Length: 95
Image 1 (cartoon, one colour):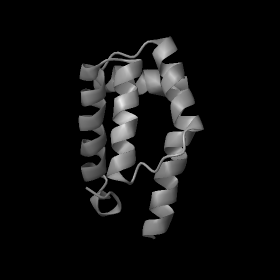
Image 2 (cartoon, helix red, strand yellow):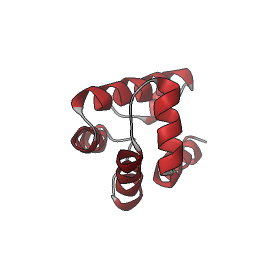
Image 3 (cartoon, one colour):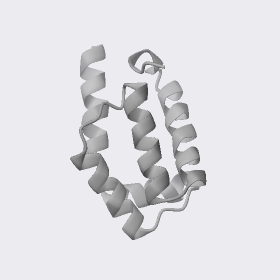
Image 4 (tube, one colour):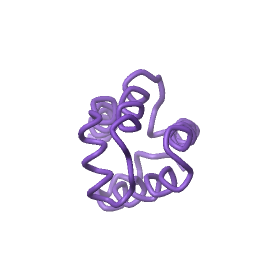
């Protein structure tokens, strides 16, 4: 089951659209404009990374900070951690 959940997480991140990213930004209180949302979606779709690995997540947060700003990247990182805990999948993510 863990392998299935891990693949589902990877797949969802790669399939996020700019519209979804803008929606989540509004819903969770961090600003992402249309251009930034498209850049983030393109990055997630085109990069080879494993969001379950801390080293790769750090690369993602750095790129998000480059596309948006440090405060937005930090808010997104905190939200990501909250979602991991709320869904009880902490065991899938290395620290």
